[in-house]
Length: 150
Image (spheres, rainbow, N blue to C red):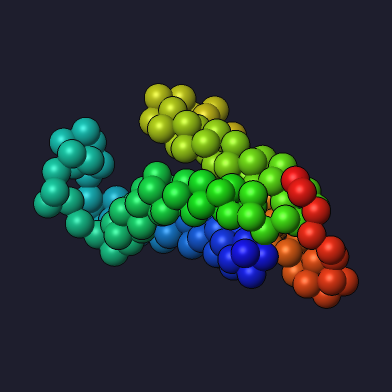
């Protein structure tokens, strides 16, 4: 279970990188599209015919952020009860809490730019918590920490 804890923490951290790359790809592509004469308005945003290089970045960012990362964070919390790592459960719970906040900020960012600002900042906290979770399991492997009940 400790190995699963480590892998899940590392995978969530990796997916935060995917999130950053995909949204940068999407907005860069959209900016180029606009510079080349594309018009972005409500109709273009709702249309399935609006395409530009990078539009897939919006899809990847949305699916990872709304489904995959929250699911993995929840699985990490469940695994944490069996991994018997010192501070494993609180670390996983904090990560899940940050992911929930991240989803709410992402949803809210369409109505206030300040939520978008906090969404970007909180992403760094999610990355740090996920990396800390992975490191917690790696350190326990190296020092052969005896199991504790969390």
